[in-house]
Image (tube, rainbow, N blue to C red; front, top):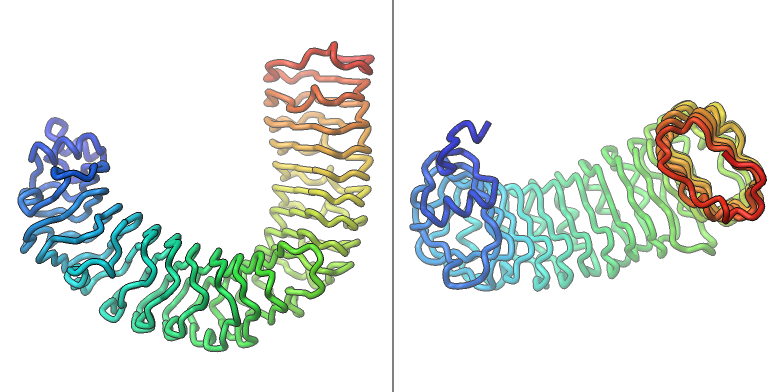
Length: 493
């Protein structure tokens, strides 16, 4: 549609997103007032990479400008006044432009920049915009302290992700009363400033992978009545306040690998996603809420804790779609599972022996068992008509995998290190396109019949004990390994 605006002269189009065309129009001064979007390629830092007011004189209606590695110099009075979005990556250490007053600017991106707002003597002139809503300072590797935020009254999104030296947030952050999203991921802050608890409209607070962040989250968090997402993955926080249950808008709580966390108070019933997987395999405390049944809206649960039998309340989570049970080293028995599960992953539960019959999981799409060393039997495979992906890895005592032939929707099968399995049959799985089998040391019989879309069987050449192999009516198979390597094989097709 844009090319139809002017199929001869790119400078007559409203959007110049193709960087080769944008560069040609820009360098040859072929732009017109019709250009609203300009996406320029990376400009090497040299004298010719300096932009002046004259550079943009013909582009009077520019609304979006993306530049990288360039410098603005000179007087920009009455220039770029209509700009709404400036993406200026890798901007220089010194900011030398004057009258750079973009009063209509809504989005400002300064990521990957060597300079920081604290270094710029003219920074305040950019911040004259009373409409600025998004400020992206991510990947500014030299920034140790944020700028003063007292004039950012309209800001709604602040992104400081991966500012790897940032260890101090200016106290003025509390003045940004309209802030909705605060991203502090991968910074080196040690604590959350008190001003954050003054951000009453905050919806997303993400401090994941702030490995130096420690201490307790104060009860002041209760003021954030609009908070929807709280992510503190891989931090050293020690506790959350009990009044977290008062955050009635909270939907996502991410606490993965928060190994200093001693307990988890009951979250609000509004929660949809809860992640409390730990990296410790020998912890002697629990970080699972006492009243699981209260989480009636929960759709995704990922956890690990010391317990022998899963609580019966787990069955009552009727909205739960994704369940990950990982590194529950004492878990021996699962009595029941929520009926609407779409994904189920059970891993590193080394004492787990008993599972409920899986046949009631009518909506299950992905199923994965990993390093469940004591598991001897999995019942109900044949009724999983919706299953598309099945992985069984390192279940050493598992002797049978029955019912694969009824999995009409199965498209991915990966079975490895199940040393006691002697027979495997994959029949009429018309959707199967990827099968991987490896380290099945005792597998003697392997049948793959009428899997029309299957094109390759990965790991077949490593089934050293195979005596019977039947591959038939698999029209997409492109080849099999040299059967002369199968010393035990007595019948093969």
